[in-house]
Amino acid sequence: MVRANLDVGIASAQDTGLRAWRWISLGAALLSCVSCSSATLPSDDEGAVDDRSEALSGHPRRAGHPGSPFYHDGRPGRGGPPGHGDPPNNGGPSCHCDGTGHGHDHCGATSTGGATSTGGATSIGGAAGNGGATSIGGTAGNGGAAGTGGTPQGNFTLSSDSIFLSNCQIPQTLTITNTSNVPLTWHVSGDLTGIAFTPQGSTLAAGDAVSASLVQTANALAAANLQIDADIAASQTLLVQGGILGVRIHPPADIDFGNVPLGVASPIVCIPVPDVWPGEGLQFLGNSASFHKSGVAPSLQTCGMGWTLYVQGWVPGPIEIPLQFISMSGPQVCAPNTFTARATIVAP
Image (cartoon, rainbow, N blue to C red; front, side, top):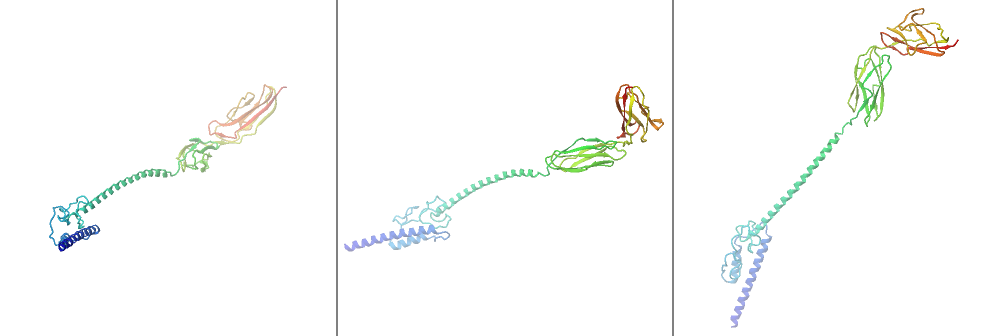
């Protein structure tokens, strides 16, 4: 009896040890599966484990139900059909880590790695392409138009767009005004033959003006179009017209008849033609009731070609009148071309 009980105890202990060995082997296999990366276990590892188990137990191996992780005697089974990318953890406890998920029991659990395709969600990062909206900043390129800032535009005015030059060479004035808010430089261009234009250019500060003098220098001058140009403004046209230059003479001094009795004619004074010019003439400027002249045109007098003049007044008091030399058929007689005759009418 004691021997029989001892045998039973030994058998029980052996069976318990066998069971422990099986679980230890299973755990080692699982750890090996987790840590492996490229190496794979031999395809007959399970058979080798089962053979060792059978050798230790002395009992033949019995198959379990298909797909069951254990045999009927509690030993790990071969598992179900090979996995095909089933969800994680559906695989059996034994894994060959070949990474394919095909051809080995439940290694399809590695199909969880397929879940890394979720990483494709990083394509959402493509939304960062919206950053291209910064291209709107290109609108700032319109600011480049300010660079078109270029040379500032100005303006100027002329006091007249046409000038008739004096036949007697009296300077005519043209006023040029810078109406810009920046300095302006101007100059005159065109045919200046027969014209003295002074100055012919200058620089004007903002708001400043200059008066240019124009004088005819030629004996005869046709109309001319001159240009007033500026560095920051459009040119303007100035029409200049002239004619035949006038005649210059040497008029006599003033004539003073002194005191002349009321109603009595004064002595006659002869006034010779001071110079020779075409169409000589002499005229009164004003009321000449008390002064008497031989006429407008000269005639032969005791003093030569000229005029006679005397005074006879009917009202007591001083009197006078200016006389002017003129041209009746020729060019203008230029100043100085006048003199004055005066007298005092006294009662007897």
